[in-house]
Amino acid sequence: MSSSDLPTDNGHNGRKAGVRRRGLLALALLAPAVLATAACGFQPMYGNLGANSIGTAELQQVEIGGIKDRYGQKLRNLLIDRFYADGRPAAPRYRLETVLTASEQKLSLQKDATATRAQLVVNAPYQLIDAATGAILFQANARSYISYNVLEQQYGALATVENAYDRAILEISNEITTRVAAQLGRKL
Image (cartoon, rainbow, N blue to C red; front, side, top):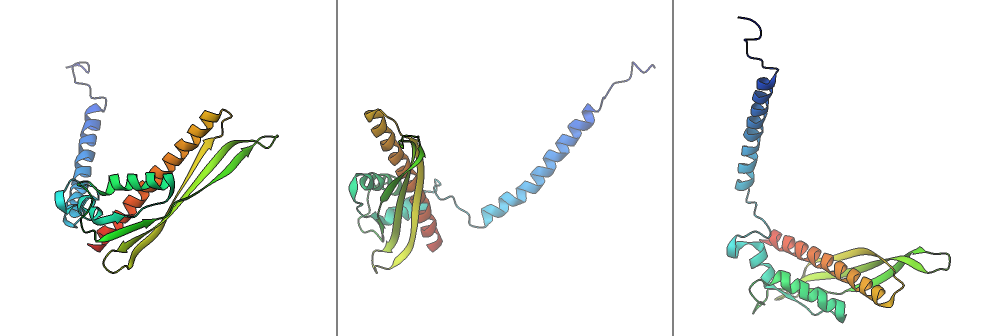
């Protein structure tokens, strides 16, 4: 029997066995962690757990107060879309009060003192109030910083500013929804 008749390994079978062993080791280490998470009472905030999930049960018990101005109305509509999956509550347990303020800062100035870049700062302090007692359960501040180009054309400039406000309000509505849901989840 010559050396050419022997099967050549070149280390490939050893590598495959090593990869299999590492995969089994990872599985053996991950399985207890997954089981421990399931046993600790962990539940997803926006999960599809039916009537017991925070997203469908507690957020639907929050009445969203009116917010002044056009952008305040847009923020309120986004919050309504996120909080109420099955319609507005008949007898809400909580009330969410929000105020919306905005300011614009010029960032990049040319030699003739005209701006080419600006930043929009939208601030929304809010309070979660117990509807029965009037006690403040939670208060926080959501803030968004959005940068945009300042354009010379009138329509383009208006569209850019409008888009910046829409992006800021979307960020704020996501933050408020997440933080209120987390606070209500802690109360349960």
